[in-house]
Length: 371
Image (cartoon, rainbow, N blue to C red; front, side, top):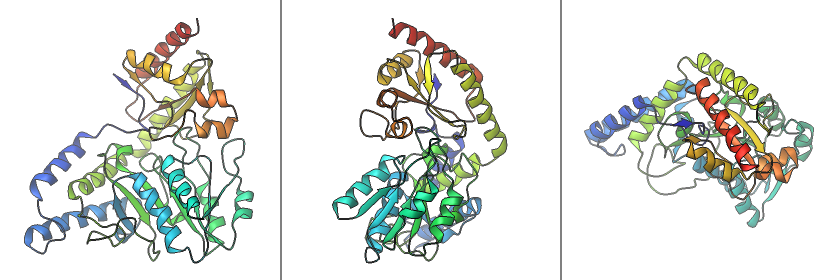
């Protein structure tokens, strides 16, 4: 099997599975219980939270555990919208956002909130000057992802932060699901950030919302004591232990891992010159993602053709809605390219041999399907 869909989800690191299993077996108490088993469980959660905070250079109190990035995104957007509705109902975002951003924004529009989408430059980055002009007295939130999940375009988070910080009543949220574990990040640049363990070789079902200290939001889930007042429910100790372990492991020897992915991306781009496709990801995109469009072939048809050779890539993001890529269309303005786009996503586990086999299979099926 050749797996080239790491941006959708990653295989779970065996050490993470071991940590999860041990936590399930050893710590059976509810962390909110006052007896010894509960106290022991809480100590384990506190230790895991401190490790995450140390790795990300944040405070333990700034960590909100969620079920994944989608819940984190919903909590951030709705949490700000409902908490600060008295200040205004204007939100700014982009056409490159994940469906878990688009969904809550559409929901808020139905409640009377106004959403503006900042324009994109030819290279896919947002127009910073337009962003500055779009922010009004009643703007309460700017939500812009650090890396687009379909094309891999990186946004200038530091520059966006500078602009938003000039407006004290406005907050900056970033979906960093495709950044955490893949890049070195600076969470001090944002007020809120979302990410999920399954993107960096952790378990599915656990994510984090970073929330800057002293920032209040309205909870998405009410009722019951937990690790924070901003997300109720019994703390999922084994999952919390697992995300801490996954984060620690993915940042070990990080520079070597990143360099390897860069080399694989460069090699893949060189090999793709041999086949009849359009490459949509710009050179400055994150090296983990390479998006391309087929000529005259449906993306889903090619996906299943590659699957016959035990090769797995994706069309749009796994959570996308619709029959074409909104991100590719936003950049290319070409509906055909957007409807025939596919994504290869790499990791430090990817090899040149896997890329060679993928290119060979892709070329074979292009020739077969265009006869």
